[in-house]
Image (tube, rainbow, N blue to C red; front, top):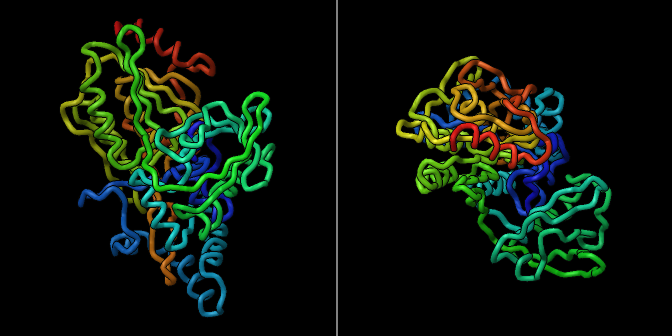
Length: 390
């Protein structure tokens, strides 16, 4: 179950729910890693890569030492590392057990274990299903968009913070595998019922397309998992000739920055996408040549647009390629790199920040739309496109 219509301050929650806030089988309400590609072409750094230890040793040393001392004392190294990260004041720092980190990387590959529901919290604190993945256990059970989730394994969810609902749906480590059962209480109108679902291995559908009247193509990117960038490029090539495109990044919590750069290449003919620093060393990310630079383009954003999605938005806005419509984005413009701890767990700590092509910092500031709109955002986008000669 994923809640890409939701967002919260990610990572700063108890361990066990942290992983579920990144593209997993329950209500995703967090940010992705913000890891950057390197010259070797990898999307994310391996925690065993020696270049990471050399570049950010000072930031990881205290965390590794805390974990090592905890192991020697027979205590939990992960919990000790978490305390060290908390003391460091790193807002985006996180510690994962070895199994959690493997699952995290699987999620970035577009795979997850779950029941195939997307949901969000309404104004009254009730949890509402916003989407059901085709072919999923939830779809087979007849759950529909608009159904209300009342309980998870007999625990009522009304009024609970989304992160707690995430934890209930996800279960603990031994209960989260494919084939394990989760019992949901649901409501539709006057009907209330319970159903037991078994979690399954599923693939995310992070790029969807639809065509509006007049040939306008809406491309929605839910997260930048592996392969998303190329799917965006294909969608642009297949869109009706000359018609405008709406790039919907609302609720996109980020992901692999390399995929965001590839997506930018669909609309740019090369050139700068972003600059970033790692321990003071300045680097740059560039789009590939050959993108569609003439088709009218509007990008939709909101407070759930984060990390890699903000990087893409900033590039399109700064380079005059898109009109940005919606509300101010979340404001996560930091770079995390992982390192392996003595017990096999992984610590990801902030080592730098990225900037848009014009030099704007995103972290803590977000991106301000060209046209602010909280309601009827898609209709506003259509109006903008008509003015651009869609």
